[in-house]
Length: 257
Image (cartoon, rainbow, N blue to C red; front, side, top):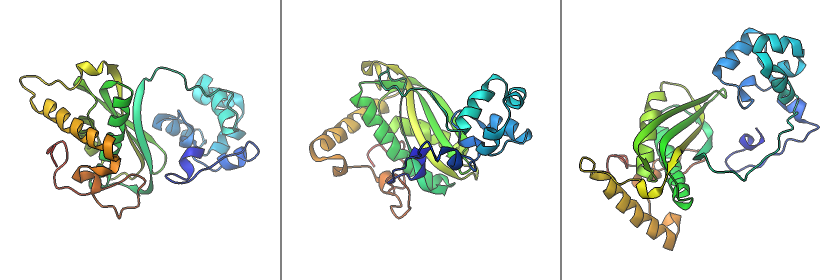
């Protein structure tokens, strides 16, 4: 929660002494792990804020949401004994950003998605991973998490292929809701040697791979800002936490843009 407060440029710490007061007025949907169904069920029982959960009797929560009730009550009180561990095999490689301004229009979110795909692609290549399942993550203005996934016919490391899959998922979710966070990730990993090979019916993927390889070589020598695709420059005036730019055609449609 603290990491979401002042993105993209801020830094926040929630101290133990102030945790309860800080959490109390926030909606229950801010607690990690509570989805839309859980929010609706808690609201029906009268629990709309985190403070409502913190003040609830354990027995009441058992009746409302079952065995998970005591854990959520502890989280609402700022109590979480779990240790943070970072040494584990990667299950997902992803990049996400919280926006300075909530956005609803596909045209505004599309260039941000492209920049995230570039960063996720860079991480996949650095970790020598290729993912087959592509997942789009969105957080609405009222903190509801939306995830949508699609499975590719072969694994990929390419930003253009991540973007093509994520763009289709994003377009379906741009129905008027305002989003404060967007992310893209890859999972279901394979050996990079099996990725982006194409076949007789898919001659574009090897071409995309060659183009991205050339771009990567330029960036490795001269820096990430040395070269980029047009979409990443769309509407730099938009105050969002990702870089943005302008192109009439997306990289998925025109890999040489």
